[in-house]
Image 1 (cartoon, rainbow over the protein chains, first blue to last red):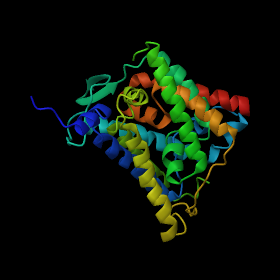
Image 2 (cartoon, rainbow over the protein chains, first blue to last red; image 1 turned 90 degrees about the vertical axis):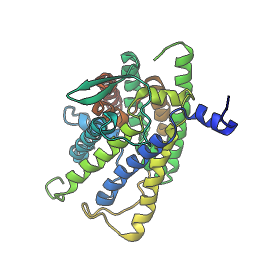
Image 3 (cartoon, one colour; image 1 turned 45 degrees about the vertical axis):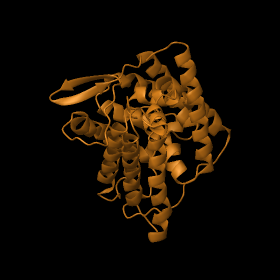
Image 4 (cartoon, helix red, strand yellow; image 1 turned 90 degrees about the horizontal axis):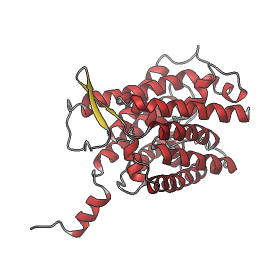
Amino acid sequence: MVTDPLPLQIFAELFPNGISRYAVGGLLVGLGVIVIYIGTGIPAGASTFLESTLSYVSDQSRFQKYVSSRDWRVVFTLGIVLGGLAFAATVQSGVVTTSLYEPGTTGELYEVAGVTLWTTAVQPWRLFFGGILVGIGTRIGKGCTSGHGVCGVGSASKTSLVGVATFLLVAIVTAQVVAALGVSP
Amino acid sequence: MSEDRHPLFIPLILVGGVIFGFGLGFSHMARPEVVLDFLQFEDLGLPFVMFGAAIVSGIAFAVLPRIRDRAPLTGSRYERRLKPFDRNVLIGGAIFGVGWGLSGICPGAAYASLGIGNVTILWALAGMFVGAYLQGYWRS
């Protein structure tokens, strides 16, 4: 029996799905940010949409300061949804194939009109209560994984580096505790 | 403001969003399971997405101001927009961390997740709006 050399075994253990889908996906996320920045000078983050959209239905002064950007933030979010759908209709459906993409085994696949769609097996209560904390935390903390993690880190902002270190560490502890309590998925 | 916008402003935002969302789908960040696998140290791929994207955008943020002064569609200067640091960055970051670690989803990935067919993610999106409303109500 031939076994892989040790470094390859360790790599396969740390990265069971390889790294290319992550690296290519990250390059595309960065490219999306750049396209908007080149044209407009705006480093776009995703979580402000939550508050700017609330300004359509709520008079709270906190949301009103986003009135001037709320329309394009709706468009940005709509673009992200459509980008996900474009991915589903091409790579996820197997219409476009590339060795850089590792399909993985998470969740459930289903098909609608020839498009392979995907749905999560993570329990709704986790998504809902986690979502509430994400909504509170990203807005109090001035950014999320895109605003702090991509744009902020990209501009070497100390505020964003501290923000990212904080939410990464707390998220790791939280996920480990939740898993240790036997909650899965 | 919206009346004197460049006609290509909104289309460009849409194109940027589509590329951004496609990347979140391709990288599997739109799948909460994969984010949770990273946080539980079962698949360490996630930093390649976040820091890969940060490096790509960082290059543009650094190079563009040396090439041109202003963005063509808005006339805004290419400048670093640094957010001031205060205690809220730590408090908010920690609350976000608990939510991210519990759910495995963050705002941008949640929008993309809806696009790849994940109807169940509406629970997370509903939660995010509730959370954003609560903090806005408290702070207004």
